[in-house]
Image (cartoon, rainbow, N blue to C red; front, side, top):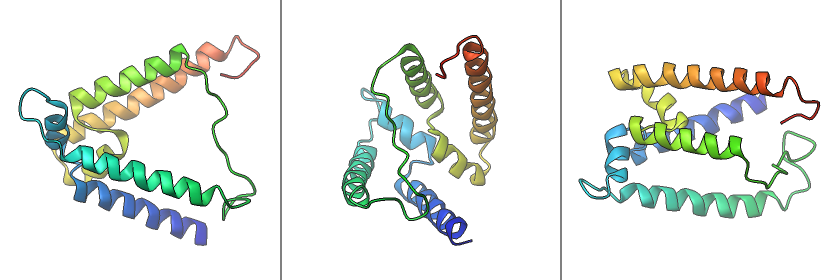
Length: 146
């Protein structure tokens, strides 16, 4: 119960931060990406603040022997740059540039029921399902998990 409540509060705080910072407004995001038009640098400050908070937060949390609600930390171990990583990054960037949304802000913005959001979120979810199916089909013939 406590874990679920804390997860809910963390998600609510994250969503509120996205709305307050303007990240749930695709026009603001697209203006940030439009360097030679109506460029809006304000999201650079949002990103810089997020990087600073994450940097400090990781330094403090990783000093603990274990997380509060798990026996060990589950941190990524891979450091290689492969084709799936580059393909995923490219698709993410194209989607962000065309739609003005990352997955988190898109889910936050769906509560505003804007037509663009109502089209983007189902397409994003279908893309996630298609990627999972493609990954499963691609790794079916290999004995080593991807």
